[in-house]
Image (cartoon, rainbow, N blue to C red; front, side, top):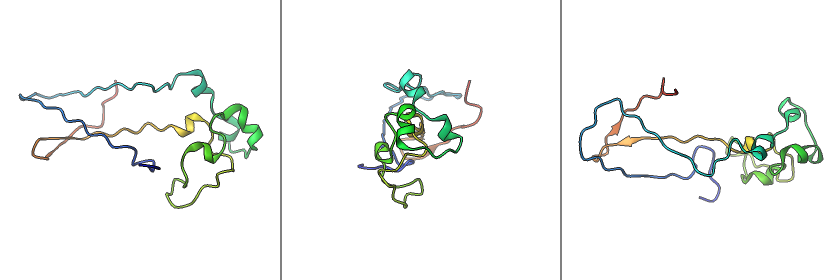
Length: 126
């Protein structure tokens, strides 16, 4: 996909073959690589003044938000409504790497016959 919308992403299907019955509860764990949410550059790439509602110029945002300062830096061409075009030379709102990244992986499990496996999504964080 050239320009996925926030909920489309890049779908990935992984087939796992389980050759015997497994009794619940069954926990699914996974690991992310190259996702540096605690890296100093990532954490500092935001403007608190902008997040408080102040409209700031490109120059004011560059120090705090680099490398995502303008809409063209985001890599998207339309607003979150998926219709309104973004003006590429205007400041990104919000700016910075923190605003650009949204972790929203979703999961589904299905049996070989295609029947979906119901999963619990509450009370799952330790």
